[in-house]
Length: 416
Image (tube, rainbow, N blue to C red; front, top):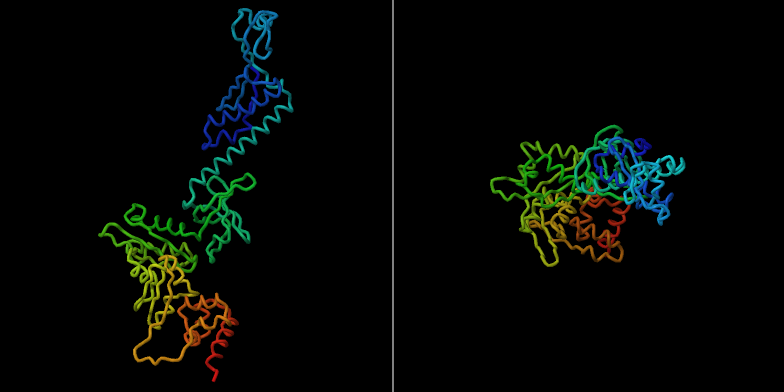
């Protein structure tokens, strides 16, 4: 029996569980039917039989026996005198099956077929990988750090598939070591140069959600719903949760006894502070909770413009704003409202002559004024009363910018 063993050509393909056997056999059949078309001009009268278990391949040629001298199509018909040479019992009208010796195609043709087969197998495996990870986008996974570069890190999954964790998707204080296991979510899958590239993330809101689903069984069971997550990776995060069961305290369940549940997540996020708040459709209450740990005195809300003016005691303003304005930024993202912070005037406090910060628009850049207003500094004196260090902490301005800003503001009060 003339056959060719193709185990070397598609052994890896055969062992790939995710690729079904019929697909594998179809690919092999297509490759060799192409070879038949090149040699004979057509493949209609040929049967390609693949043994997927052994990796064997056999090709049979099928022709109808006709009377001598009546052969019109040599590919589909064979003369009776030729047929009886193979088997004396043949009769006109019967079909003759002959096994084609693969080696008759020639060594070069067989090598070309193997290369084509390997290429088709490689493409199929890429498609399987692409689909597998596309279906898993947003899923939490653990992978091993294989190589760390300046702009990204290469990780490997259990099946030795390569995964990319860009520097921008790493928590700022992440320090990756080769060989360690790392948790991340699958963010996206792209096709570059016909090769699937899988990107991971540790900075996305989805990463925090998945960690909470693992640590808090009530979330995984659907008893508690995560309404929204906002993050400043490595610094602070706010999570709004809700429970439809009045017997369950969603915030207490997420934090755990003495913080037992939330501490594991905080460690994974490199000590990122996590504020878990009880979600409510009452926007005033939601804004109040979102500005935790600050305590609000009162607020004015414009629902049409989605704007909120929040008033706090002097010692609460810096808490509401947070380091580099992170707390108020996250509160805005969580509520969907533009929140401006103002210092509440205390009883008996003498009113001083002051100037609205907007009046300096011709001397101070607009973006600087916007940042100052977001941090509760809406007048010249409210800026000047802050120390350079406090102003730098709130706004993240450069020292030179702060000094120039104060010079411009103070100049206005020094005028006669």
